[in-house]
Length: 316
Image (tube, rainbow, N blue to C red):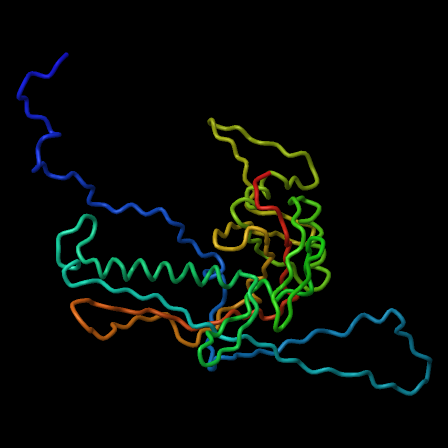
C-alpha cells in the first residue's frame, strides 16, 4: 500500500533521540594461565640470577676391587643462570571535555581507559613470556628484553625437522611444522620424565591444538563419547599418563605452533617493579597516565619442563 501524502516518517525527522545501549560489550580474552600459575618472587637488579645443578650421570661400571684405595670422584657445584627484566608499559591520554560529557556505558572515560589498559598490559606479559624471544641487553636507546620460554628449553625438546634449541643469547630455530599426534605427545612425556624426577603437571596449548588434544588423544583403550541429556562430552581436561596426570589448559596468547609441558613448581615471575600507575604532568587540557611493570621469567631449571614444538596451527 502507498503511504499517504505528507505523512511524516522517521526518515525525515532530524531530532529523533538515539537508542544506544548503556552497556559496552567487550569479549576480548582476558585469561592469562601462565601469569596466574607461576610463583612470585622479587628481583633486586635488572639482571637476576638463581643457582641450578644436576646429579652426575649414572655409572653402569661402578665396581670396586676389594681392599683397593679410594679414588676420589669429581665434585661439582651449582652454576648460576639468569634473565634480564623487561620494562613494559601502557599509557593513556583523555581530554577534559571527553571525560566530562555524557557517554554511553561509562561515566568517566579516563577511569574506563585506565582499567582497560591494565588488562591489556597483563595480556602483553603473558604473550611475551611464551614467545620465542632471545634476550636483549639494554643500552642507551635499546629496550632490554627477557629471555622468554621459547629460548630457554634445551633438554626436553621435540622439534620438527630443521628445528634447533636456543641458547643464552639466541632464540630457538623453528623447524618444519607437523600435525599433532598422540605419539608425539607421549614421546615428549617420556623425554621429560627421563631427565627430571617428576613429570610436568600442566600442558599449555593454543586454541587449535587444545582442540586437537581432545580429538587425537585416546590413551590405551577405545574412546567412548557419552551422550547424556543431549550433551556430547568431547573434551579431555586431564591426561593420566604412566608417570602421573597432566592438566590440559588453553592459552590464547602463546604461539599456536608450541605446546608447553610445565612444572609449576619450577617456574616463577621475578618482579623488580610491581605493576603500578602514575598520573603524568598536564601540559594542556588533557589528563595523562602511565602504568608499567618491570619483571622477568624465571625458569628455575629448564630440565623440569618440555616443549612439543613446530605443530601445525589448524584444527585436525
